[in-house]
Length: 461
Image (cartoon, rainbow, N blue to C red; front, side, top):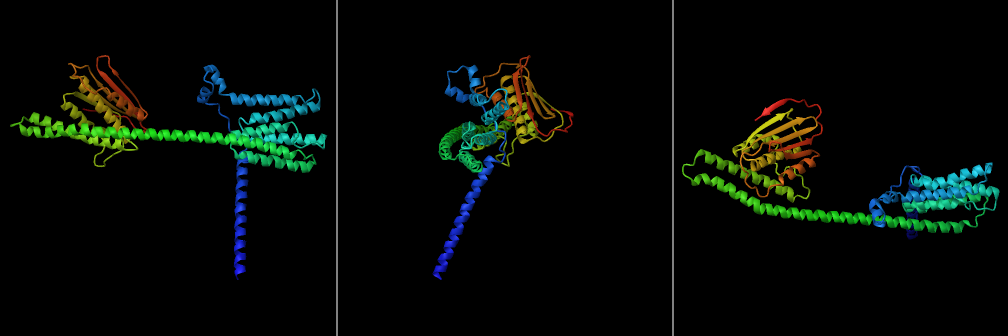
């Protein structure tokens, strides 16, 4: 019984080993088929050298010659093909059928290296075909000749090296097996001399292994460069997040504190004065509302700044949605209470827009009116919202100031912020003084899927 169990175990292990070897052989044949047979003549052009490499290798080269230096690999292969063609013509005799056949064979052999620039695997098959034709011809005239001892074989070896350098290292083994498998089969078939076949196979194997090593080294170097670039990007991203966290802390420590004090004092001020006039109480209430609104916006900004994936248009709190163009009336009332005479005009058919577009348009109007309050006291302003086919137009224009504007510390970044918002959404913006001494901000934000909207006119004051 024990011997039976041992025998069964040995049989099972042998079957497992056979299956494992069969899987390895099947995988190797599958890779061989994928590399050399599937889409063998697919178009894979060799790109020119990068300008950075040219500048690093030959920094002393003039700019005009650098453009030609990018095509140096193509010119080198082309020059080699010309040399192969001229060497083949040297064996042809003028005016004879044999000479014409030799010239055609020279074209066939010389075309293979040139084809490696565009269809590398196909160039290998073309070169192998030329070597086989040359071997048959040599054996036909001299039965003692080697099948692969003709002039096409050095070109075949050069083509295999170029293919390995252009594709992947494992093609070196695959092409070597196919090439010398065909050579052995033809030697047996036509009865040629096989004495020099083993040393030639060893020499070609050594050359192809060297080419595969160069190709593997280049691939490894490229991966190292990519890894270093990814590491540098990650380091830059981490530095950016740390800087944004620092900004968030400073915003919270400075701005939030002062805005909270303003809101508390504005709420308590009417109770400190006996018989407070209604106008004064309304002004304090407006100050408190603006301070509370500023604190809410500050909390959203801090949430965005602290986020690892910032999205200025994402809602950080479902109970506190971002402002949209629907909140434009309250914004206009706020600036009017501050003393700015503003008129708003809406043209086109109002329709729901993406949240990012709505928020950016609101912020542009808000910043434009704030600039008018700071820099053009006493001037009138006009806000135009245009719902047009393909996007949204926003225009804020104010006249010349009627009195001297007070200094505004920290100003100067509002236009930059508006421009960044518009560019983030793929739009365009202009901000420039007008001829009458005022200022105009005009922006267009593209919106997809706006076809079919009809335009109507309307005013909103």
